Each structure stands twice: as structure tokens, then as C-alpha cells.
Amino acid sequence: MPIYEYECRQCGQRFQQLIMKPEEEKELDCPGCGERKLDRLISRVAYHVSEADRLSTYDPGARQEDSFYRDSRNIGLHAKKQAEKMGVDLGGAFESKLEKLRTDPGSVLKDSE
Image 1 (spheres, one colour):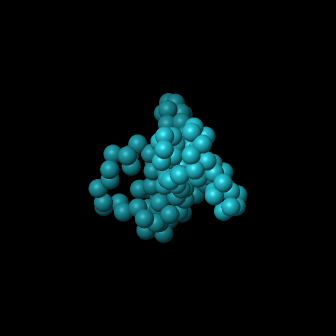
Image 2 (spheres, rainbow, N blue to C red; image 1 turned 90 degrees about the vertical axis):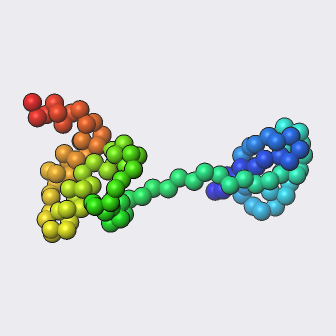
Image 3 (cartoon, one colour; image 1 turned 30 degrees about the vertical axis):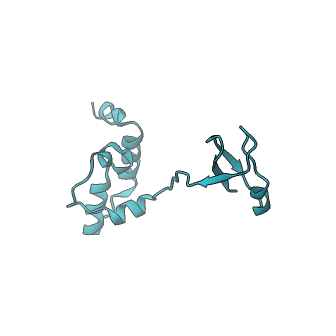
């Protein structure tokens, strides 16, 4: 269900509104001043990229931005890409260790002691 964000042309107040039918938008007014002259804003959007998509677009030779290394989902991506290129199945043990590393990196060090 679409939740739209609006800005009042009169007072500048921004607000969000759930719009179920196009007619509802025509009846919408500013909660601050009651004005009906509103602009619909373009809101931020979030989307999920699957690991398979990240793996298919990952280039091991390309320079990565700092944000790439701060994202724990990218831990093990290089190893998986190299294994894929060689046709090697890393198996379930690798996947479980990788998941543990991504969620709690310190635990991997504790386990190896």
C-alpha cells in the first residue's frame, strides 16, 4: 500500500499519508494549516540485493569503496567468487562458518583458540 510523502506549499510542513485510492489524494489537506496545495515528494527507497546478485556482479579485480569493506554481507564474497570460477562447492560447513563470521566476527576468533 503506498504511503506518500507531501509538502505543503503554504506552510512547508512535510507529512506522510497512506493513499488507498486516487480520489483520496484529491481530498488531502495539510495537517498543519489545512491548505490543499501540496507537492508530492520523492521519498527515499530501500531495496534488497540478494547474495546471488551481489556475487554475480562482484569483480575481484575491481577497486572497492570503503563502504564495501564495512558491509558484513561482503565477508567471504571473494572466496565464493573464486570457488565459483573454479567450479568448487565450498559446502555447508563453509556457509555456516561464514554466517557466524558475518553476524558475530569475534566468535570466530574465540572458536579458533
